[in-house]
Each structure stands twice: as C-alpha cells, then as structure tokens.
Image 1 (cartoon, rainbow, N blue to C red):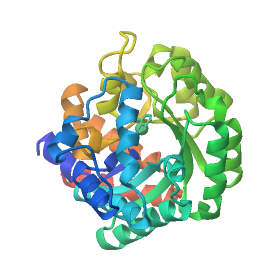
Image 2: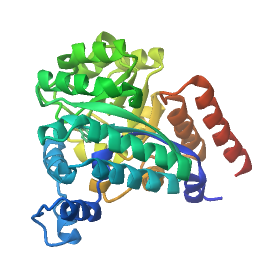
Image 3: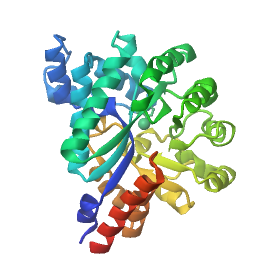
Length: 339
Ligand code: HPA
Ligand code: ZN
C-alpha cells in the first residue's frame, strides 16, 4: 500500500482545528443569505481569492471578518456538523475543536446558542457518523483579560460540554501569563489547558518557557520554535508534553532562518511528541487532515513509522479517559497490522 492510501485509511485524531476556521466560502454565502446579510464578494471564487495573508495578524483579519455570518444556534450547528462530516470522511475518529466565543459574544450572540449549536452537532455526528469530539474554549488573547474572564464565566454553566480552554489569536504583546487567572479558574472547574505558541512570534522562546514551566500547561499548540532551545526541548520531553503542529500554517508564518524550514521533521528528530492537524482548513486551501498529512510526507520526509507515531500521539494526547485512548490506539494498531 502506498503512503497516500495508508494515510487515508488510517484512524486519526485531530486536536488542533478552529471551528470558525472550517467555515468554507460556500457556507458563508448560505449563512449570509439565511441571516439577511450582504457579503462584499461577487461569488465563492472572489471570496476565496481574498484569502491572502503573510503573517498572523493579516490571517486573523480575514478569519474574524469571515465568522460574522455566524449569528444563530443553527449556524453553529451547521458549521460544526459540516466539519465533523468532512473529518469523518477522512477516517478522523476523534477530534478536539477550538472555538472563539468572545468574537460571537461581541456581536450579541448568546453563549447558549454558540455552545448549544456546536454540542447538538457533536452529538448528532457521533450518532450518525461515529466520530467522537470534544470542545475547547479559546481566549482571544488580543482582547482584554476582562473580556476573556466574562467569556469563561458565561461558559461555565455549560462546562459539561467543554473539555478545556486554549489561547489563540495575536501573540504580540499578549503573553500567556496575561491569562494566569483564567487558566487557574478553568483548572479549578476540571478543564484542561493549552495555548498557542505560534511560530516565530515576538518573545517566542520566553512564551514557550512560561507555558512549559510557570503555567505548566497540558499541551502546546504549534510550538515549533522550541527546537531553538535544547533546554526547553529537554523540559518538554521530561514533562511528556504533546505539540499540536499545523504545518500548513507554520510554513506561512515562518519569517526567520532560526527555525528549520521543516518544523515537523526538526521536532520529530528532537524526540518531541508531535501531532499534526489542519488548523483553519477553509482558509488554507481547503486542506483537511488527509491533505495535510499527505503533503507532510514530502515536506517532512515522513516514513510509515513516523506517520504511525504521529497518529498514535494524536490519540495519546487526547483529553479522554485512559481506557478510551487505549481503545483508539488499539484501532490504530489493528489497522497498521492489517495494512
Ligand atoms: N494561531 C493563532 N490564532 C488563530 C489560529 C492560529 O493558528 N487559528 C485561528 N486563530
Ligand atoms: Zn490554531
């Protein structure tokens, strides 16, 4: 079996995907129509042609503008169900999805509608398609700490529908310690904590150190610059930290020569626990899990063994009971042995 077929058939977990980043242009038009909104694009092709960015802020501007069509509970349902159906069609059997509620609260959408629509879709997709999923509330780090706390407080009545909190958006001037109290409160409510450490950000190594040591988070999203610091690599290995790496995006953001061109290869070679995800596929050429992995085979010189390690890491890093993770790893092992 060639590696492309091997990837397509492999049971997978995706642990770094922003639901609003799966909002395809076609659905944007459909939701805008349903909500009586006008979009400043003639058609899908023109909208997609506008998805041009060269760094994190220029990406985020497009991403936040696009999500304004999400207004009502059924919009969040449709968005989530469409992603889960796509993921399930690529043998993603488990996924942990981010969402950015502050952006929706700003527009007057109720937290109950955001989490309610997503949760209803999660349950329906699990019933109909067999894909299991969980939800991670992301703090939008360039908004105020107060705004993030308001979002957390508004979400806590729905904490049974959440597995953790995360930190995304523009890292410049918004270090992880800005959210120290939020993380502590989330943990006190039984939630896990992760944070984006996007590639090549200002103070990137300092922020990695903070999340690894001071805040002692449970996972790191992206985090590729760690290979610049043998000391931080050693700490991450000692702590058994998993990294959710999104090669499509980190390739876009890389702007210094200090990080090797191929972050996935460098992290694997450093002995780090790497998982691979699609991040914001609707804005990244509609490349979902299989597309990202297939591209990574070439870009990162991945072997069959690397792919199996990455898939196993995806399950082992999941925020699930040990027995459930073991059952998913067993499915992977059975596939590998039969392939
Ligand atoms: N990094 C930071 N913020 C984001 C991302 C990301 O990968 N995707 C959506 N918001
Ligand atoms: Zn991300």
